[in-house]
Amino acid sequence: MISLLRAPSIPCGSGPRPRSEALRFLSIAPLFNRGQARSHRVILALLLMFASLTAYAAVDAFEFETDEQQERFRTLSNEFRCPMCQNTNLTGSGGGVAEDLRREIYFMIVDGKTDEEIEQFMLERYGDFIFYRPRLMTETILLWFGPLGFLLLGGWIIAGIIRRARPQVQVNAALSDAEQERLRKLLEKVEKQD
Amino acid sequence: MPRLKLFIPVFIFLALALLLWRGLYLDPRTLPSVLIDKPLPDFELPTVEGGEQLVSKADLPDEPFLLNVWGSYCLPCLQENPILMAAKEEGVVPIVGINYKDKLNLAQMWLEDNGSPFDYSIVDEDGRLGINLGVYGAPETFVVDANGVIRYKHIGVIDYQSWQEDIMPAIAAVKAEAAQ
Image (tube, rainbow over all chains, first blue to last red):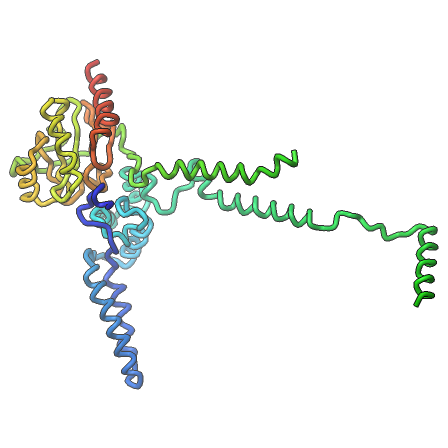
């Protein structure tokens, strides 16, 4: 129904996963020894089933000059939210705009832009929404510290309840001489009855 | 006083209910645009109609106009086309299209089949102009003033109501400003 309201050129869906991760997943297969061959053949079949899915999903395999660049690409794509498929990040989104934004990030990294510059690029176009981790500002203080506030409030209420549940009557341990005398008499009476 | 204290949970409940009730009527898909009151980005792209000829920011109308992001794959664009066609016939404002992430031949066919409300449509095949405009899908519509500054953005389909209540007032405001 959503596509009736807004039409992404490519609909939202499970997004591309970096190809290297799929291969790392598969590389377990050669570790199997022969003695357990049968059960492992089943596992292998299952793995291959996943492999076909991931191979299909790996649409944009970008080539980076260094591993550090690739790592930055991965981190940044994870940190930005897809504006179209809203509760996914750019890595996990198959939406058309997510694909374009990943491409922009790729080119900016290759062009030697810093993470801050890339964040600024996204912010200028899509606003704070683009950050999965909201920045700390006046508008987001409640978001960041609200849970802590509720925790403190809850603690305070529980402390109050516990305090009230304690016996209120103060027991005065020291008896006066007259009371001591009375107590002695009472005890004697009890002993006699026994 | 202690009596009043008993009702604290009720007050909390009412406040929360009010907050969530309000939340029911917010559209999470409509993102506030950060590009309001910012100038249009620079571009140099071909048009659906103009073959090899490139257009740039300088070629855009020097009066208030609508910039409508559309695509042949986009059903709501088809839905809002009659409203834009009517606006064109009445000569409300010039309408420039951005053919967003589409195939040229499909875009041309779409315009032939459904009629074109656009003076021309800028071809944004790789979606780069779209990104610079903070676009994340079609349709999206911008009201741009005579100086090429974005003044209003409508996300999603334009229906009769949003045309009357949102877009026309935005156009009227920008036009009144331009007339001064």
